[in-house]
Length: 115
Length: 231
Image (cartoon, rainbow over all chains, first blue to last red; front, side, top):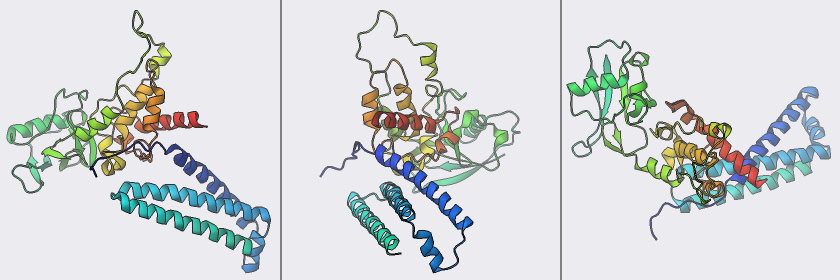
């Protein structure tokens, strides 16, 4: 195999845009969440359950969790691309990152709808 | 006036060292390069590049007290002593403050820094309106001194793959030129996770540029155009 520096994968814009859009989603959710906590303080488990009981709150929280996963994917991938020089190791770490993030997303669904 | 200067001769030295120098001068309105020429009289083995001595050729770019800049336009009086001089970070050292710029030039060449226009040549020049010409302000002034690219961590990690701020500023300079007809090819070439998207907008390039240019803004414009043609 020749040792040659190769570039030209021809992607990147979608990820870059996605990172920005998911950041806006997370910022909006954080503001709404902070507002909810300030207006109706939560003291106990029953309070937390009541906060997440409405279907719209579950959906908004899921949207936040999915945004976080997509945002983290682009960020972690960028870190791996910068610092991990071996392409094989990079592929392994990137695959592991995807598996972990997808599990987190599934876990978030399970938590939200079991409340 | 005290100096601490990076010395390295790959032929004879096992590793680089910092050498102290003293000059019995007042800073006055002297530039750093003037003092370095006096040091060169003192010790003619001290090696650095310089040419125009007025911030136009970009030869004497170096790391001055931790910041990249041109020695010829850096007032001595603005510097804290001992004045520490090192070669531009990230590039291979040829000797003392002289670095091998090949990686930098390679990235510059890769963006095709010339007008591409297959249309029939007109009788006279390809004219631009004053507005079209104004699009190039803040782009064409780059002197390729490499202060920006060598202050960019993304360029340090991937100098063979990331175009770097200087190259991307020039890429946008040709995209922005009304006489250039290769916008599509240029954008295709840059839409790449390494060539363009290693830039995370930390703006070291803007802080380093001795000509006051803004590569981050140009990179943002390229991303805007990429977005515009996608959505």
